[in-house]
Image 1: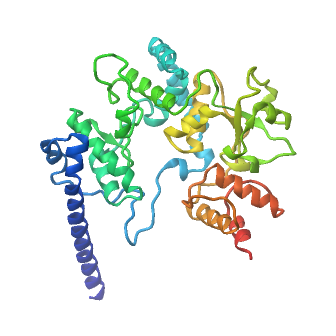
Image 2 (image 1 turned 90 degrees about the vertical axis):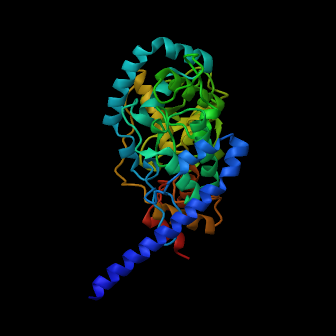
Length: 403
């Protein structure tokens, strides 16, 4: 009997909470109308049609819901590096990419001439984002963005994205086309709504940049976005290398940037004894080890940074770089990835907290690993006589918490 009462009470409480959230959500959406009208030129008809009966999707990740832990589904920050950069999957995408490179040869050549972004790079983005159009995101963009704007952990950003999405509707983009990721990115090369107004390029010249159905428009827009983020013509994204015994992964990150000439002087060499290309001596680069000491390391350039602006993840940018290399005829990473398991948000957060408490420059404690966390973890390991692998672990947490 008590169990039945408890279940009934739980259902009743859940229904009440949902009703309260729905009411609060409705009030929030209605509060956006003046801004949609005045700043985004959205008509009342479009606003009402888009928001009438709209309910939040509380199953989305990265929501700030009271009593619920943060959930992260972004593969770049959850999967093991070896799994994310799966060689077989990269190989299959590369094969498809080479076919598309031939099919769109003239379009890609024009895109490269116009924006300076090598064709294999934009094809790699197309491949990573939607498997060359084979994958259609599952979410309604309007619902996703409204939910994230209402109770997401980055409310202000998503507030703007929601309003830009309404503007797209006002401009005639069919809502059924606006299928999105959980974070609201749409189209063949996954643009946020605001990016439709800053980076798109109408390759076909028909007056409409169609990122949903036109491959040339989508590829040209991806190239334009990279150029807008600082892409440098005729510069590689990076080079896999061998770290000399006199150095380690604790030198990683933009903070340790040097010219290629300086890295080479310190004994850094390309894998397989490959020569360094001419003209790199004065080019800035930094060490990047996406799995710490458990996988390949690279010297990466400003073009790696430009790729990261597309998706702020080292694994993502490494995926794009390697897939582009493969499309051009290159192969797998030469240094093997070790099986270190998935990225553990709680462990990463604990390492970040421990490093910050000990005076390390950790600006953000978010449970997501990046070059700064790896660098500072390695610096601590080096200073405390530990094996330097620059990777968050339970052992590292215990050492950081040990008085």
